[in-house]
Image (tube, rainbow, N blue to C red; front, side, top):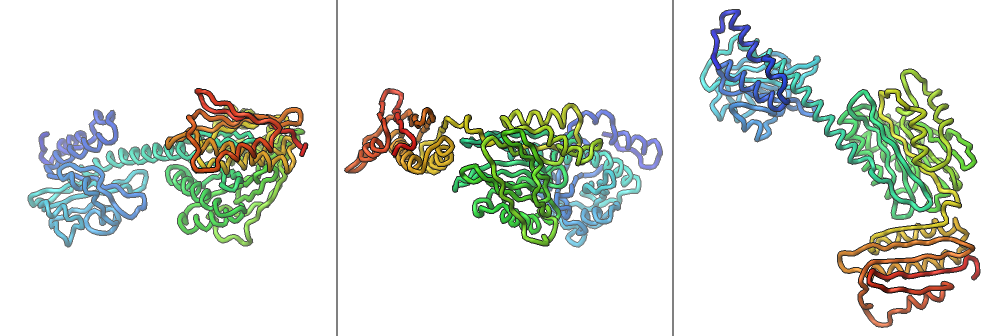
Length: 532
């Protein structure tokens, strides 16, 4: 590319046109940065050209693209704001020209080790925000002119726009990927409970810190949480991810939602001091008959009974997590959840609009919730409160419905044939059997029978690779009947005096027989309830 005499206005125009060539507009950001750096380098007769962008902390410049000394990028060169050549440009937001390049003027040893003798640099600014620094260097002593600096400014304007798009696009992609990863794809299967959820991104663009989560604890308790981190984009999504993980961790050590939110608040104030979030956190007892809930600045859930009585729960609301010191201990409220009851959690994007105040939105929500299948409840709520209207904010909705007694006559579980599955099996039986009329003796005996049959599957049916255990039970005419099935090839019992478990199983049931075939083994059982 020809170099022009720096003196004439025509040359100045040519120089600007070279940098701002419309043909560059179609290039992707990475390619555009490379092409611009090459053009700037050739145009000014420089030996190097480099772009350093501000990192997420706002305290360092990081070499991002280079032409001539590419190792600046490969080695992850970092310069603190206010230090050395590039740091001074960034801190002052003014051009700097250097005729002496050594450890006294430049903090990046790559430059003086490679023999750079002169440098000129300008800040990258877009929309009033500092994004980074553009600089060029020469291996021979020279004085970069005012016109050279002007050309750098033009290039910097173009690069700043490209960098801003790059940062925005990268953050959006990363935040979207993070949010998709962390929002549950499949909600857990809980016998006696029907679950469904919806997530809808706002049309303002980007992503937010809205999230929901449902998970089981080893104790048999069920936890459900929904929250909204203040802010948008990658920072909010990143904090959301950390809060979700922290909530799960604290849940393992506490059966009190208020205590979990207290720990979460401490976590945010220490590790995320510039962030704040509203959170609703609830725990169901293994029987599902009661819910314990604590609110940190979050909107109250809606509860609809089997008789279609719907209400917005009036619960005490404590400050959001990260909002500062809490004047009193956080509070937990215990709510009875009879069979057929639906509990709906949501974030504020569902009920708040520019054209609708919060009270009207809550009233519409209350009128929209009816107890029924959870998926249908979510669909009806989104239809009536969102419809075809554009929304500025993201929306998360989570519905949990305790199934009515008539829908709980059957229990089906498919578990990994591993010892750890026995705890989940026992929890599910303790939860389901009383709902179909089993008394304490029935529950105790059936836990022994089904537990022994399942333990046999785990020990004998499969080899090291394991397999599946399938339990099917049904309550009918005052009886519990069902099957425990595997698809394995049974191994011989290990040790002496084995087989007593089968005899005990027969004594605790009215009918029990075992079928073996080429596809696996099936244990059939039947027991009258309340007869012993």
